[in-house]
Structures are given as structure tokens and as C-alpha cells.
Image (cartoon, rainbow, N blue to C red; front, side, top):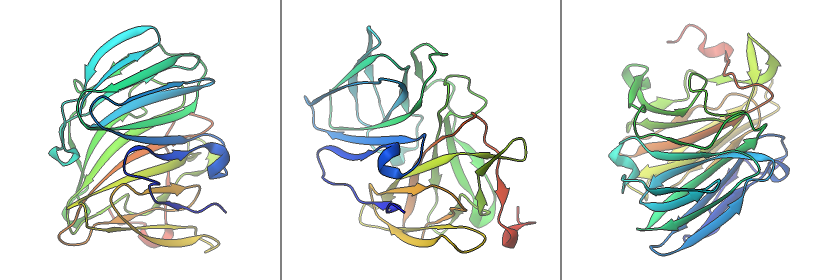
Length: 264
């Protein structure tokens, strides 16, 4: 099995490039660019749809033959404001030119051409509490099932306070048996506050054939090909992650791990 924990391969330019072939699966792709003011990146979407997420900073975006202006006003992801994003369908080109130092996530999945290019957020994205007690976290839904912006992609941001858990109670979405459960591959792009902190993510199956516990650091990516995948933020370290999911159908249905059934 490919390595689930991916460290960035640099601090400037493209620092992650995860393709379905590299991940050993079929749907989700993820890349990350950390640009300095004036840097430029350009790509073609090919047969895939893309959501560009302005994680931090500002960039001028041109995509699908349109000038989308300068997107982004969140200079630090832990400001927790809504992100500026851009949806680009398959068969199109896009270009980003950094206006300030910025971090841009490229979320991709198979596209069918069913949706036009569009801006996503910050309007319409509101920070929403999920869970309670030490399971409290805060969500920015960018393009989940309720938002009919995409053919395949499901994308969301999660902020986990120090000392709390998220993606918990443990759950899995690794079978194509709708409406009970859906098959969705998933990536987690992690950030820590302070940046020298760490958090924990476990990826495991009920039968124990997969069971990895990873100490994640700032800018790491974790692959979730199957199984449960909870995250824990130690006291003193605040955790952010950007989730990208995709599968044969654009629905998020999951099954809880047996040991956590009944935990809210």
C-alpha cells in the first residue's frame, strides 16, 4: 500500500502532488502550491474537475476563458474566515498569479462537464459548530452534498480546538452500498497552530488489516483509502484540515466504528 502520510517536498512552489495513480486509488487528486508574491502557476484540468481553494493569501485567477479577479482575503488560515474558492470544470485551463504570499490547494476528481465554472465563497460559507464537549469542531463547507456545484468533488474545511477530537466518532465510507454507506476516497491537508505543533491521525479498519497512527505536522497530507480516520489535537496545538473526497457517486454516507456506536 502507498504511504498514507505525505510530507511536503519543499516550502516554495508545488509542495504536494497526489494523483490517483500515486495514491493507488481511482478518484481523488490533491496538490498544493505555496507561492511568493509575483509567482505564477498554470495548469489544464483535462478530464478532471478542480476546486482551487485560497487557503491563505491573495492571487489573481484566470480560468475557463474568464478573468475572476483577485481572490482571497484570509492571510492566516487560523483567522477562520470563509475561504475564496474557484470551481473549474474539465477541459479548461487555469492560471493563478500570487498578489501576496499565498497557499493554494488544488482539489480534483473526475469531471463530466455537468457544471459551469463559478466562484465559491466567501458568501454562503459560514463557520458552523459540530459536536460538543471535547468533540467540538468548526466546519466551513465549501462544496459538500448540499452544494450542487460539482460532478464528483466534496470539499470542506475543519478547525479543531486544542485538546479536542474531530472526524470522530470514528467512521468509514469505504463501500458502495448507498444509502447505507458510500465509497469515498479522502485526503486530509493538515495545518497546526503554532506551526511547530503536531496532531495525531489514525487510519484503521475493523479487521485490523490497516491500522496506522501518524503524528502529523504543519502542511502534511494524509491519505484515507479505507477505514476509520479520527484526528486528535493535543492541548496547546490547534488543528486545521482541508478534506477532499470523491467516489462513484457524490453522496457522503458513513458507518461508525463498532467501538464508538452510541457516542454522539
